[in-house]
View 1 (cartoon, one colour):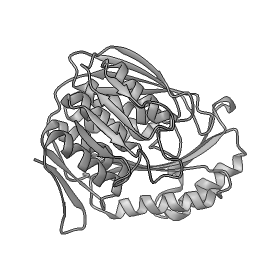
View 2 (tube, helix red, strand yellow):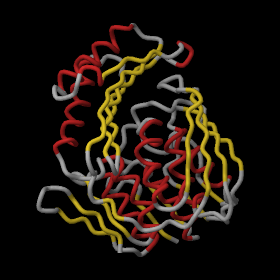
View 3 (cartoon, helix red, strand yellow):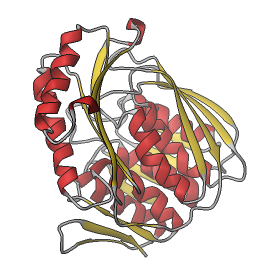
View 4 (spheres, one colour):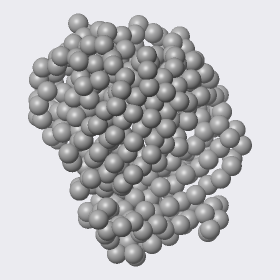
Length: 338
Protein backbone atom coordinates (compact mmCIF):
# COMPACT_ATOMS: atom_id res chain seq x y z
CA UNK A 1 0.00 0.00 0.00
CA UNK A 2 1.24 3.46 -0.90
CA UNK A 3 1.46 5.79 2.11
CA UNK A 4 1.30 9.54 1.59
CA UNK A 5 1.87 12.41 4.02
CA UNK A 6 -0.92 14.81 3.12
CA UNK A 7 0.89 17.80 4.62
CA UNK A 8 3.92 17.55 2.32
CA UNK A 9 4.45 19.64 -0.79
CA UNK A 10 1.40 21.65 -1.78
CA UNK A 11 -0.50 19.85 0.95
CA UNK A 12 -4.02 20.40 -0.40
CA UNK A 13 -6.97 18.42 -1.66
CA UNK A 14 -5.24 17.83 -4.99
CA UNK A 15 -3.24 15.06 -3.30
CA UNK A 16 -6.45 13.24 -2.36
CA UNK A 17 -8.09 13.67 -5.78
CA UNK A 18 -5.05 12.65 -7.81
CA UNK A 19 -4.34 9.68 -5.55
CA UNK A 20 -7.90 8.40 -6.02
CA UNK A 21 -7.69 8.74 -9.81
CA UNK A 22 -4.30 7.05 -10.02
CA UNK A 23 -5.35 4.32 -7.59
CA UNK A 24 -8.35 3.44 -9.77
CA UNK A 25 -6.22 3.22 -12.91
CA UNK A 26 -3.23 1.38 -11.41
CA UNK A 27 -5.25 -0.80 -8.96
CA UNK A 28 -2.87 0.25 -6.14
CA UNK A 29 -4.41 1.02 -2.72
CA UNK A 30 -3.19 4.00 -0.73
CA UNK A 31 -3.34 5.59 2.69
CA UNK A 32 -3.03 9.33 3.20
CA UNK A 33 -2.37 10.89 6.62
CA UNK A 34 -2.43 14.47 7.95
CA UNK A 35 -4.73 15.54 5.11
CA UNK A 36 -4.42 19.30 4.40
CA UNK A 37 -2.43 19.47 7.63
CA UNK A 38 -0.98 22.94 6.96
CA UNK A 39 -4.29 24.55 5.96
CA UNK A 40 -6.19 26.92 8.26
CA UNK A 41 -9.02 24.36 8.21
CA UNK A 42 -7.22 20.99 8.01
CA UNK A 43 -8.85 17.71 7.07
CA UNK A 44 -11.33 16.82 4.36
CA UNK A 45 -13.85 19.43 3.23
CA UNK A 46 -17.25 18.63 1.72
CA UNK A 47 -15.98 18.84 -1.86
CA UNK A 48 -13.13 16.42 -1.09
CA UNK A 49 -15.56 13.93 0.46
CA UNK A 50 -17.82 14.17 -2.61
CA UNK A 51 -14.84 13.61 -4.91
CA UNK A 52 -13.81 10.43 -3.08
CA UNK A 53 -17.44 9.27 -2.89
CA UNK A 54 -17.60 9.72 -6.67
CA UNK A 55 -14.46 7.62 -7.09
CA UNK A 56 -16.04 4.88 -4.97
CA UNK A 57 -19.36 5.09 -6.82
CA UNK A 58 -17.84 4.48 -10.26
CA UNK A 59 -15.77 1.54 -9.05
CA UNK A 60 -17.15 -0.13 -5.93
CA UNK A 61 -13.97 0.87 -4.09
CA UNK A 62 -13.65 0.57 -0.33
CA UNK A 63 -12.74 3.64 1.70
CA UNK A 64 -12.37 4.32 5.42
CA UNK A 65 -12.06 7.70 7.11
CA UNK A 66 -14.35 9.40 4.62
CA UNK A 67 -15.98 12.13 6.70
CA UNK A 68 -15.80 15.93 6.67
CA UNK A 69 -12.86 16.97 8.87
CA UNK A 70 -11.12 13.59 8.69
CA UNK A 71 -7.32 13.78 8.58
CA UNK A 72 -6.69 10.21 7.45
CA UNK A 73 -8.04 8.15 4.57
CA UNK A 74 -7.51 4.60 3.33
CA UNK A 75 -8.62 3.73 -0.21
CA UNK A 76 -8.78 0.26 -1.76
CA UNK A 77 -9.71 0.51 -5.44
CA UNK A 78 -12.31 -1.56 -7.22
CA UNK A 79 -12.99 -1.96 -10.94
CA UNK A 80 -14.19 1.12 -12.79
CA UNK A 81 -17.65 0.72 -14.31
CA UNK A 82 -18.70 3.22 -16.99
CA UNK A 83 -22.28 4.51 -17.01
CA UNK A 84 -24.48 7.41 -15.95
CA UNK A 85 -23.68 9.08 -12.64
CA UNK A 86 -25.03 12.05 -10.69
CA UNK A 87 -22.93 13.72 -7.98
CA UNK A 88 -23.93 16.74 -5.88
CA UNK A 89 -21.35 18.53 -3.76
CA UNK A 90 -24.16 20.08 -1.71
CA UNK A 91 -22.35 23.42 -1.33
CA UNK A 92 -20.42 25.77 -3.61
CA UNK A 93 -17.60 23.21 -3.62
CA UNK A 94 -16.16 22.81 -7.09
CA UNK A 95 -17.84 20.50 -9.58
CA UNK A 96 -14.64 20.73 -11.64
CA UNK A 97 -12.54 19.19 -8.89
CA UNK A 98 -14.96 16.28 -8.56
CA UNK A 99 -14.69 15.80 -12.32
CA UNK A 100 -10.90 15.86 -12.02
CA UNK A 101 -11.09 12.85 -9.69
CA UNK A 102 -13.15 10.56 -11.93
CA UNK A 103 -12.33 11.77 -15.45
CA UNK A 104 -9.14 9.82 -16.13
CA UNK A 105 -10.50 6.50 -14.81
CA UNK A 106 -13.61 6.94 -16.98
CA UNK A 107 -11.76 7.95 -20.17
CA UNK A 108 -9.81 4.70 -19.80
CA UNK A 109 -12.91 2.59 -19.07
CA UNK A 110 -14.43 0.06 -21.49
CA UNK A 111 -17.57 2.07 -22.33
CA UNK A 112 -19.00 5.60 -22.51
CA UNK A 113 -20.17 7.57 -19.48
CA UNK A 114 -22.36 10.55 -18.72
CA UNK A 115 -21.95 12.66 -15.60
CA UNK A 116 -24.23 15.23 -13.98
CA UNK A 117 -22.37 17.33 -11.40
CA UNK A 118 -24.01 19.86 -9.09
CA UNK A 119 -22.34 22.45 -6.88
CA UNK A 120 -19.97 25.33 -7.58
CA UNK A 121 -19.02 26.13 -11.17
CA UNK A 122 -17.34 29.51 -10.55
CA UNK A 123 -15.57 29.86 -7.22
CA UNK A 124 -12.16 30.98 -6.04
CA UNK A 125 -10.93 27.53 -4.97
CA UNK A 126 -10.73 26.06 -8.48
CA UNK A 127 -10.58 26.98 -12.17
CA UNK A 128 -14.04 27.97 -13.49
CA UNK A 129 -16.11 25.79 -15.80
CA UNK A 130 -14.99 27.86 -18.80
CA UNK A 131 -11.38 26.82 -18.11
CA UNK A 132 -12.31 23.14 -18.05
CA UNK A 133 -14.32 23.40 -21.26
CA UNK A 134 -12.02 25.59 -23.37
CA UNK A 135 -8.53 25.08 -21.91
CA UNK A 136 -8.26 21.59 -20.39
CA UNK A 137 -10.65 19.33 -22.35
CA UNK A 138 -9.30 20.27 -25.82
CA UNK A 139 -5.94 18.80 -24.79
CA UNK A 140 -7.60 15.60 -23.56
CA UNK A 141 -9.49 15.31 -26.85
CA UNK A 142 -6.22 15.60 -28.78
CA UNK A 143 -4.96 12.57 -26.83
CA UNK A 144 -7.71 10.23 -28.08
CA UNK A 145 -10.77 10.26 -25.79
CA UNK A 146 -13.60 12.63 -26.65
CA UNK A 147 -15.03 14.54 -23.70
CA UNK A 148 -17.59 17.34 -23.90
CA UNK A 149 -18.93 19.47 -21.06
CA UNK A 150 -22.05 21.63 -20.93
CA UNK A 151 -22.94 24.29 -18.36
CA UNK A 152 -26.64 24.25 -17.48
CA UNK A 153 -26.59 26.62 -14.53
CA UNK A 154 -23.91 28.79 -12.93
CA UNK A 155 -23.04 28.22 -9.30
CA UNK A 156 -21.16 30.99 -7.45
CA UNK A 157 -19.67 30.94 -3.96
CA UNK A 158 -21.20 30.71 -1.37
CA UNK A 159 -24.62 29.60 -2.67
CA UNK A 160 -23.53 27.05 -5.26
CA UNK A 161 -26.42 25.42 -7.07
CA UNK A 162 -24.61 25.09 -10.39
CA UNK A 163 -25.05 22.16 -12.75
CA UNK A 164 -22.86 20.74 -15.50
CA UNK A 165 -23.18 17.68 -17.75
CA UNK A 166 -20.21 15.76 -19.11
CA UNK A 167 -20.20 13.17 -21.91
CA UNK A 168 -17.21 10.81 -22.08
CA UNK A 169 -16.30 8.64 -25.07
CA UNK A 170 -13.32 6.62 -23.81
CA UNK A 171 -10.16 5.72 -25.70
CA UNK A 172 -6.53 4.94 -24.84
CA UNK A 173 -4.55 8.06 -24.04
CA UNK A 174 -2.05 8.82 -26.80
CA UNK A 175 1.24 10.56 -25.89
CA UNK A 176 1.46 14.01 -27.46
CA UNK A 177 3.81 16.98 -27.33
CA UNK A 178 2.47 20.43 -26.50
CA UNK A 179 5.48 22.66 -26.91
CA UNK A 180 4.27 25.88 -28.53
CA UNK A 181 1.06 27.92 -28.66
CA UNK A 182 0.97 28.73 -32.35
CA UNK A 183 -0.28 32.05 -33.67
CA UNK A 184 -2.53 34.34 -31.64
CA UNK A 185 -6.15 34.06 -32.75
CA UNK A 186 -8.12 36.21 -30.32
CA UNK A 187 -8.21 37.84 -26.88
CA UNK A 188 -11.25 38.68 -24.78
CA UNK A 189 -12.24 39.83 -21.32
CA UNK A 190 -15.61 39.24 -19.68
CA UNK A 191 -17.09 40.20 -16.32
CA UNK A 192 -19.87 37.78 -15.45
CA UNK A 193 -22.11 38.91 -12.59
CA UNK A 194 -25.43 38.34 -10.86
CA UNK A 195 -27.18 39.71 -7.80
CA UNK A 196 -24.68 42.57 -7.44
CA UNK A 197 -24.68 46.23 -8.50
CA UNK A 198 -23.81 46.78 -12.15
CA UNK A 199 -20.96 49.14 -11.28
CA UNK A 200 -19.04 46.40 -9.41
CA UNK A 201 -18.58 44.39 -12.60
CA UNK A 202 -18.08 47.57 -14.62
CA UNK A 203 -15.23 48.75 -12.38
CA UNK A 204 -13.65 45.30 -12.50
CA UNK A 205 -13.71 45.23 -16.28
CA UNK A 206 -12.40 48.78 -16.61
CA UNK A 207 -9.40 48.02 -14.38
CA UNK A 208 -8.66 44.86 -16.38
CA UNK A 209 -8.69 46.89 -19.60
CA UNK A 210 -6.30 49.37 -18.01
CA UNK A 211 -3.90 46.53 -17.15
CA UNK A 212 -4.00 45.17 -20.72
CA UNK A 213 -3.64 48.33 -22.84
CA UNK A 214 -2.80 46.39 -26.02
CA UNK A 215 -6.26 44.78 -26.04
CA UNK A 216 -8.95 46.58 -28.03
CA UNK A 217 -11.80 48.13 -26.06
CA UNK A 218 -14.35 45.95 -27.86
CA UNK A 219 -12.54 42.87 -26.53
CA UNK A 220 -14.14 43.53 -23.13
CA UNK A 221 -17.78 42.78 -22.31
CA UNK A 222 -20.20 42.58 -19.38
CA UNK A 223 -22.70 39.75 -18.96
CA UNK A 224 -25.46 39.72 -16.37
CA UNK A 225 -27.01 36.42 -15.27
CA UNK A 226 -30.42 35.85 -13.64
CA UNK A 227 -30.35 36.85 -9.97
CA UNK A 228 -31.27 33.36 -8.74
CA UNK A 229 -27.85 32.15 -9.93
CA UNK A 230 -25.94 34.43 -7.57
CA UNK A 231 -24.85 36.57 -5.98
CA UNK A 232 -21.42 36.52 -7.53
CA UNK A 233 -19.00 38.11 -9.97
CA UNK A 234 -16.05 36.73 -11.91
CA UNK A 235 -13.62 38.32 -14.33
CA UNK A 236 -12.33 36.00 -17.06
CA UNK A 237 -9.48 37.01 -19.36
CA UNK A 238 -8.99 34.70 -22.34
CA UNK A 239 -6.17 34.40 -24.87
CA UNK A 240 -6.79 31.97 -27.71
CA UNK A 241 -3.97 30.55 -29.83
CA UNK A 242 -3.80 28.06 -32.68
CA UNK A 243 -2.75 25.23 -30.35
CA UNK A 244 -3.97 26.27 -26.90
CA UNK A 245 -6.13 28.66 -24.89
CA UNK A 246 -5.45 30.30 -21.54
CA UNK A 247 -8.10 31.70 -19.20
CA UNK A 248 -7.11 33.76 -16.17
CA UNK A 249 -9.86 34.51 -13.68
CA UNK A 250 -10.48 36.81 -10.75
CA UNK A 251 -13.32 35.98 -8.35
CA UNK A 252 -15.27 38.60 -6.44
CA UNK A 253 -14.60 38.39 -2.70
CA UNK A 254 -16.39 40.09 0.16
CA UNK A 255 -14.33 43.06 1.35
CA UNK A 256 -11.87 43.00 -1.57
CA UNK A 257 -12.19 45.90 -4.06
CA UNK A 258 -13.12 44.86 -7.59
CA UNK A 259 -10.19 46.90 -8.92
CA UNK A 260 -7.67 44.95 -6.86
CA UNK A 261 -8.94 41.61 -8.17
CA UNK A 262 -8.84 42.89 -11.74
CA UNK A 263 -5.33 44.27 -11.30
CA UNK A 264 -4.07 40.87 -10.12
CA UNK A 265 -5.84 38.98 -12.93
CA UNK A 266 -4.61 41.31 -15.67
CA UNK A 267 -1.04 41.10 -14.33
CA UNK A 268 -1.23 37.29 -14.42
CA UNK A 269 -2.55 37.36 -17.99
CA UNK A 270 0.14 39.83 -19.02
CA UNK A 271 2.76 37.50 -17.58
CA UNK A 272 1.40 34.59 -19.60
CA UNK A 273 1.27 36.67 -22.79
CA UNK A 274 4.92 37.62 -22.36
CA UNK A 275 6.01 34.01 -21.80
CA UNK A 276 6.60 31.37 -24.48
CA UNK A 277 5.11 28.36 -22.70
CA UNK A 278 2.15 26.27 -23.89
CA UNK A 279 0.51 25.82 -20.47
CA UNK A 280 -0.21 28.31 -17.73
CA UNK A 281 0.17 27.20 -14.09
CA UNK A 282 -3.33 25.74 -13.65
CA UNK A 283 -3.34 23.81 -16.91
CA UNK A 284 0.09 22.39 -16.09
CA UNK A 285 -1.28 20.94 -12.81
CA UNK A 286 -4.10 19.21 -14.64
CA UNK A 287 -1.98 17.79 -17.47
CA UNK A 288 0.14 15.61 -15.19
CA UNK A 289 -2.51 12.88 -14.81
CA UNK A 290 -3.33 12.39 -18.52
CA UNK A 291 0.31 12.65 -19.61
CA UNK A 292 1.62 10.16 -17.06
CA UNK A 293 -1.23 7.75 -17.84
CA UNK A 294 -0.45 8.09 -21.54
CA UNK A 295 3.03 6.87 -20.66
CA UNK A 296 4.90 9.63 -22.46
CA UNK A 297 4.82 13.04 -24.08
CA UNK A 298 5.61 16.48 -22.80
CA UNK A 299 4.53 20.09 -22.56
CA UNK A 300 6.06 23.46 -21.83
CA UNK A 301 4.85 25.60 -18.96
CA UNK A 302 5.68 28.72 -16.99
CA UNK A 303 7.63 28.59 -13.72
CA UNK A 304 6.58 25.35 -11.95
CA UNK A 305 4.22 25.87 -9.01
CA UNK A 306 4.23 23.82 -5.82
CA UNK A 307 0.93 22.32 -7.04
CA UNK A 308 2.67 21.04 -10.17
CA UNK A 309 5.64 19.58 -8.29
CA UNK A 310 3.31 17.82 -5.84
CA UNK A 311 1.21 16.40 -8.70
CA UNK A 312 4.42 15.07 -10.28
CA UNK A 313 5.53 13.42 -7.04
CA UNK A 314 2.17 11.66 -6.54
CA UNK A 315 2.04 10.51 -10.18
CA UNK A 316 5.53 9.03 -10.03
CA UNK A 317 4.74 7.11 -6.85
CA UNK A 318 1.74 5.37 -8.40
CA UNK A 319 3.08 4.74 -11.90
CA UNK A 320 6.85 4.47 -11.56
CA UNK A 321 7.18 6.78 -14.55
CA UNK A 322 9.91 9.41 -14.58
CA UNK A 323 8.70 12.99 -14.97
CA UNK A 324 11.38 15.62 -15.48
CA UNK A 325 11.19 19.42 -15.41
CA UNK A 326 13.91 21.34 -17.25
CA UNK A 327 14.19 25.07 -17.84
CA UNK A 328 14.60 26.02 -21.49
CA UNK A 329 16.78 28.77 -23.01
CA UNK A 330 13.86 31.21 -23.42
CA UNK A 331 12.66 30.77 -19.84
CA UNK A 332 9.85 28.26 -20.19
CA UNK A 333 10.02 24.84 -18.49
CA UNK A 334 9.72 21.54 -20.33
CA UNK A 335 7.83 18.80 -18.48
CA UNK A 336 8.62 15.37 -19.96
CA UNK A 337 7.15 11.95 -19.13
CA UNK A 338 9.36 8.95 -19.89
